[in-house]
Length: 85
Ligand SMILES: [Zn+2]
Image 1 (cartoon, rainbow, N blue to C red):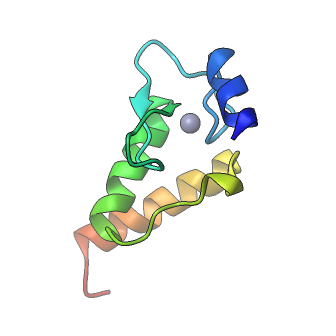
Image 2 (cartoon, helix red, strand yellow):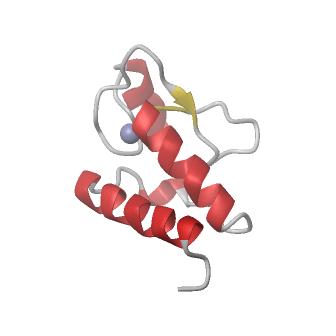
């Protein structure tokens, strides 16, 4: 958790190690949503929450591999568009 806070303080997204940017999102990984992630991760988590609302991603796995994050996001989007596949 300290590592997550340290990254946030440096303006780095703790989820994917990219820059937080000017418009960070609030991560869904904690109940009070106190953790900031970059906009892309915010979108990923939003899509993930729609697809699998009962599954919360463990912060212990952060930082995630950025290309893996994108691949997962594509999978989730496909699932949302074609839920029966
Ligand atoms: Zn990120």
